[in-house]
Image (tube, rainbow over all chains, first blue to last red; front, side, top):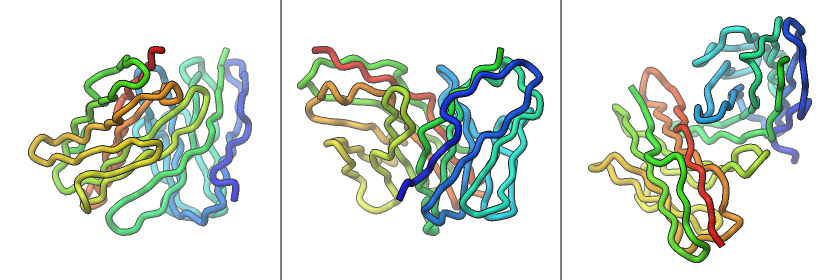
Length: 114
Length: 115
């Protein structure tokens, strides 16, 4: 049981390049999330998914796209990377039991855009 | 609308002394509240959560938090700090009964342990 895994762990891009971050979970969770973490800002939600085939915008969605073709995978894409997207990206998955939503996080991807 | 405020961005305590990390929240309904810990270069790990059961919640590694509705607080405490507690801590509020249905993270408190 690996929990939530993220690929890659580190990446350096040049401005304008594209890339895809992969998140995988083996807990059969319906909900999956992508966050970015910047110093002094806490975690900010980029996009999320409430089930296979669904996606929704979070707090800071501009410049990112996502897809959830399989329940266990949630992909985050950057079509044209910008230096402002230099950040640490965390994926999370969760289950909801009617009154609460407990999130489980991956180890993060550190992205630098030059 | 929901919000969460972590009152200190940095807290320093000596090893063996008590830890207090403060969190205040705002929510229209009955929220769920969480504390997560993040060690350097790691992901976030759930410490504990409150979901309208007992107001005093015990978590891992000797941490606990008390939900005080009258004070809208959910402070994290530990009786005796250990060097391994040095990390960043996030308070999180979630209100699934609210139409906004959001999960809000505080900006974090970095805990420093002095030898």
